[in-house]
Image (tube, rainbow, N blue to C red; front, side, top):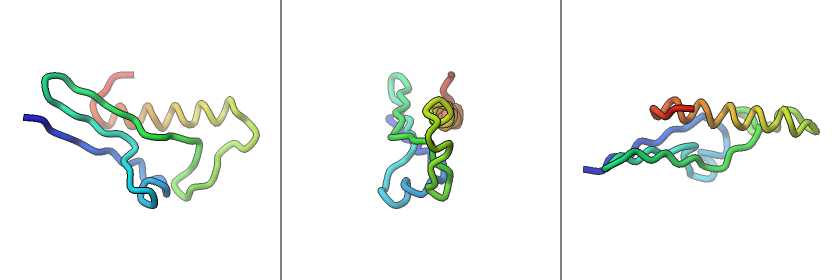
Length: 74
């Protein structure tokens, strides 16, 4: 039986655009798919304007949290 688990990070555009940050599908193996991730806070404000390094670290941190929440390893 295939199961699906959605993860929401609580960011504004997830609700506005109707998507989950990450989705885990379990059948013969587990697959976790990550949706568009940017350096924004829960109110939709861009974090670290003008600092691409800090924005990238922020986005990767959001992805890491989503993966861990769905049982993935980083």
